[in-house]
Amino acid sequence: MAVLLVLLAFGVQVVLSVPLGILDVVFQNVLHRPSPNLEREPVLIGFINLVAFGAAVALGLYLNRLPLRRAFPIGRITAWQVIAVATTVLGMAVLLSEADNLFRALLRPPQWLANMLKDLFFGENKLLSRIILLVIIAPITEELLFRGIILRGLLGRYRPAVAVALSAFLFAVIHANPWQLLSAFFLGLVFGWFYLRTGSLLLCILAHAIANGLSVICTLIPVSIPGLTSQPDYTVTAFQPWWLDLSGLCVLLAGLWFFRHATPQTETSPEAAPPPSPPRITEESNSAPSATHPDG
Picture 1: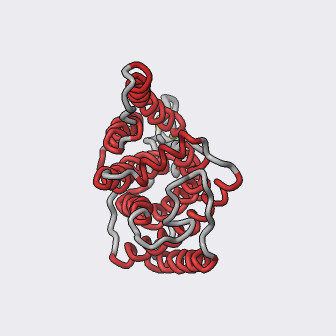
Picture 2: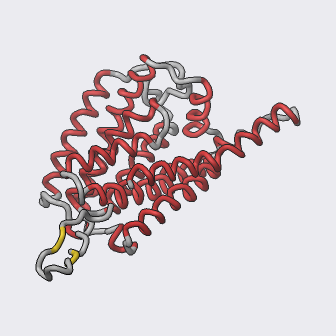
Picture 3: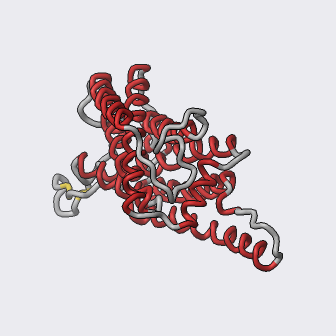
């Protein structure tokens, strides 16, 4: 079911994106006018994400027969937990930025992907639309699917570590290119851990928004830091200063320690795990329920 939902979201994205690409080609090759690059427009990408992930979430809710309140628990979060999450995500952002630099040095992205990422993260006069897409739409839609539906379902069938790893892998796959695979996978692991410790989907959405927001902030910082803020060309690799990587590691470890102590729970909240299926009573005996797996 998890794979089905991911394929549905990805398929809808492709179906809705193809006409935009065709229009770009028509403008450039038929009308001989500058391509509007519709497939790189943050507002249109946000609309496509809303439709694609909305369809997958709706199907997941239908198949699991879940009301919204049970599927997407808000939970109680504290200010200390929010600070710990922000600290953890900040440290991860620094280290994953360097990991991405190393990956690009080993495997150069194609020019079309580099142009798309450049337009998405560094597009001029698109700051508001980038914030709406990266800090609002993407965190909400992706967390509703991957932590609210998929991880919740996997927790009913697998051990927590396995469930989190599987959901993180699917979260990485939906990004559909190797240059975002590593960062998305490790962020998925941490978001899953946040969910396990608190049972709160809201905290995962907040963490996701912070992670994406930091990428936007890095494009606005006037100070040039090699490998972090001065990377408008994704085909050219620059590495971060060693002190920045070391600082990121220290911040990450401090954030993980802080979050663990800010969340004394060691198991997922009952509201965050899928309920077991009701036992079936056989005709031969009213006391012999058959074992069934929970939905998800």
